[in-house]
Image 1 (cartoon, rainbow, N blue to C red):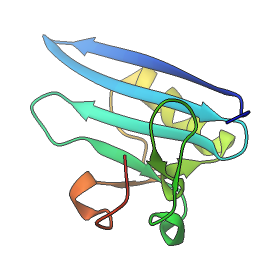
Image 2 (cartoon, helix red, strand yellow):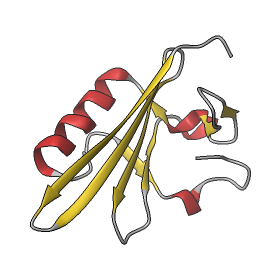
Image 3 (cartoon, rainbow, N blue to C red):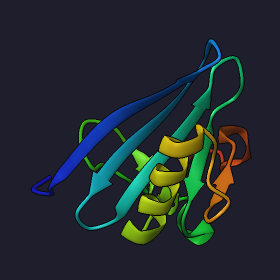
Length: 105
């Protein structure tokens, strides 16, 4: 692989509800974000829809390259999540069932 990557799981708890954001960074592709509102289908960050059919392996799993966003977008989304526990409106989000057949998430 040879790339640099890291990941974090962030939890937001309020009024007995827990929401989670998973952040995966890849030096070459940017940041992958997964928003989980427990009991609901997850939301995935959407960077370039044209790259959804191209899977990459930033660490020990595969994800569609189109799910990665740039640093500024990721920072905005994580900041919004830390403050409100909600998805940022500054980036597009997609549900896993809307991905092409062979796109990993």
